[in-house]
Image (cartoon, rainbow, N blue to C red; front, side):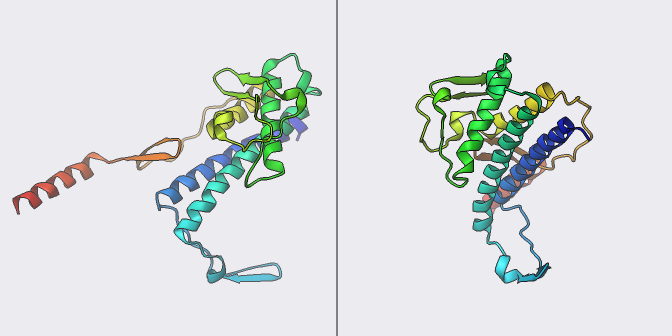
Length: 219
């Protein structure tokens, strides 16, 4: 396997991990995520019981938030490493998209590396007061960011980084696009805006609710 193909695989793995972390976070927020763990779990020289590792729902919700952030961070790491593998001097590339993708991924990586639970922006002097941008995908304005607490609004959020990861894989590493295999059908209409989650009620449930209300009013 070539070095480029390895990085393509790592980018895709990072995307999959982000997608799974997104599903887990949504499920824990909706109290729909199973929290089963082994009654007894042995691995190597150690053994733990269910009582030691069991999660309460509020603990799972809290941990899922950081799991999602960690998956976002790993996409940035994979992007930075992949670009370095195919571009010798990405900072000085004549392709502005390569420069932007590399610098955004690198700066996000740096923010998490030294303080993964409370990341802080650490902007190099030669990157300050600049805008790194890929149209319709992601943008980072480094003005006055150095030393500030990391905020998703600074670069557009996790979905912007997800799009960047795909952009790098497909347009910089030239991973060919293939028709996607069939995915499981969603059983619930869920719409999410930021951290706000809305669930669509189906017609049957709505009709049953209306009939119950009528019966209660009649009684």
